Length: 208
Image 1 (cartoon, rainbow, N blue to C red):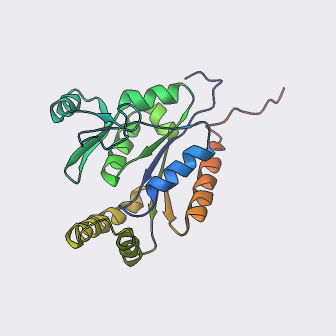
Image 2: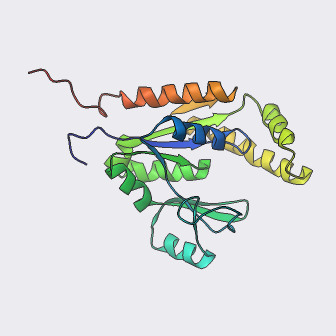
Image 3: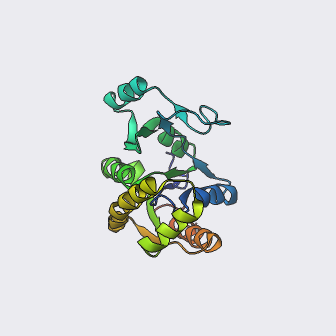
C-alpha cells in the first residue's frame, strides 16, 4: 500500500444470532460510502432472489473443501450445518484499493482473522473487532421469540450457542451492548470514526 494512502479499516463484527448484526451492517454500508462488504463463500443453497458473487459465492461442498486445502480462506467455519468462509483475496484486494472492509462473521471466524492478522502487518494495522450483544441472555431470548421464525428446539439450540459466543467478547477490541437500532448505529459509527483517527492510520500533518 503506498505510504501516501491512509490505512483502510478491516472491521470485524460478531454477535450471537438475534442480536441485530445483519441490520447494523446494512445501516453501516448505507451510511459509509467507502465501506464495502466482503462477499463470503457458502455451501448453503441459494435462496430466492440471491445472486452469486453479490450475496455470496455459492460453492459446492467439494469446491469449498478444495479451497480450504489450498489455504485460500482468511477464515472459515461451519454454522448450523453449512460451511462459510471469507477468501483472503477478497479482503486484501479491497483493502489495497483503499476501501474499508466489513466482515459479518461469527466468533470462530473472528478468531481466525485475528490469527492471520498477527502474522500479516497490513491486516494487523487495518483490523478492528467489535462484539455486539444484548445486555443479557434473557433479552436475546426475547428477541429471538419475537421473530417467531423457529421451533422451540431450534431456539434453544441458538441460545446454547449464544451463551458460548458471548463469553468470547473478551477477545474483541470493543464490546457494544445492543439497545435500539439507532443507538447501536450511532455508537458503531463512533468506533469507526475514532479508529480512522488513530495516528498510524492517517496522513501526518504538514509541518513545513
